[in-house]
Image 1 (cartoon, rainbow, N blue to C red):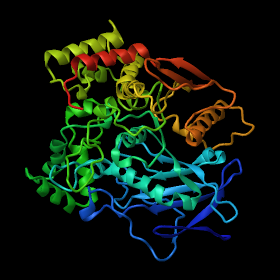
Image 2 (image 1 turned 60 degrees about the horizontal axis):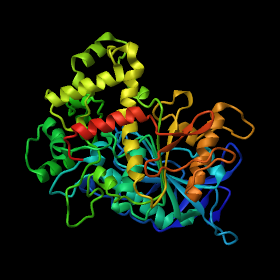
Image 3 (image 1 turned 135 degrees about the vertical axis):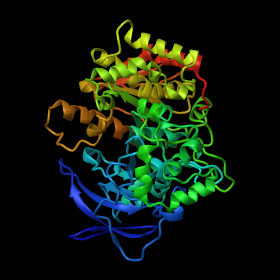
Image 4 (image 1 turned 135 degrees about the horizontal axis):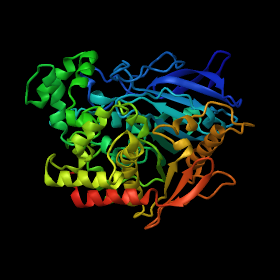
Length: 516
């Protein structure tokens, strides 16, 4: 490490980096290294393929600014986007070569938007190194074609590749490669869960935190990937049944052409189910030359205990679905009339039922009766509508994971619900990365931020989440499902939304006709 008035320098495997020195609002000095390339730009022949090692450099490069974020539909971005950022309160020296626990943030955004361009906030005051990263999104990250070198899950492989980069380089920044926690929210939470499920990431991290996201959520996994892959080509006039021919064509397009096609390739039924893209994580086609990221269905991996056994925190916010439901014209009677006239849109697509079938109609009626009783689905029953989608889109997948993990005692799994201010989807992130002063501040926001930062960093350090002077958070065990309710106080309760979750357990047990 070299420290000058202008910058600090760190040597990693690829070459020398120059970073900046700054401080938190609490006065903790820390060092920032932004926009570090961790893989080659996935462009041209590398579009849709697994990440490749970044080229080394001979002259020091300035890691002062965030790199480009990955391509996304409404805000541009670049395919040259595989960058990682490191924030550390302590660089190793001859006098002190001790290492700090590492927390790697994986951003959310429904696998179609977002970036790792965050500031770590109060976490650095608590003695951890924070890392964030970009990964490919939408078709660029999740196109899947059989018989090609684009088998799928490139975005998840980016994350795994970045975790390997952390293993190889984080000690140079003062981080301990043997104490790495991955954490993320929404699609980032689902991504964390996927890393827990994947044999490709075994040994690359040692604890995991999923905020409001699970690989078992219906929006986080797709089947029928081959059919979906042909949609952009067909829309752009390239009709073919050959996977390699399609892949070659898609690689000839510039990023804008391909990106613009994506807004035209969703079916009406997918739109009615709030699906934002045809391209998401999937079961990979087998290849002899490459280890798959996801060799089995997520449910199968969970049910058979084949996941990476690490201490795990997973939970939801109490009012998740209010965030996206309110994006629609819900005050207009016509919105609700469409729902009532097409009641089967509340039947989960991943149940695998044929629309119009007796079973599909039966399930639709059961869901309506459970959540609405004799009342109409309307703006007046908006909270019921929000509860339905909070359960189906978020809580069910998370609680299924909790119940699966309770059958295996190898490691501890902790469950939570964030209920402060009727918390919507994504609201916890502002408290995890709290950017305001905490010391001497008695506001509710500061209190919630203390809870999250203490719980998350204590877990990163020891594998046991705790807040001094507060209730002990008990992990789940066989037939016992305690959860921590995080609000103005920390309260240990049992069986998160038990009646509602059990309703969905019964639905999937009795009607499931899918494959995952």
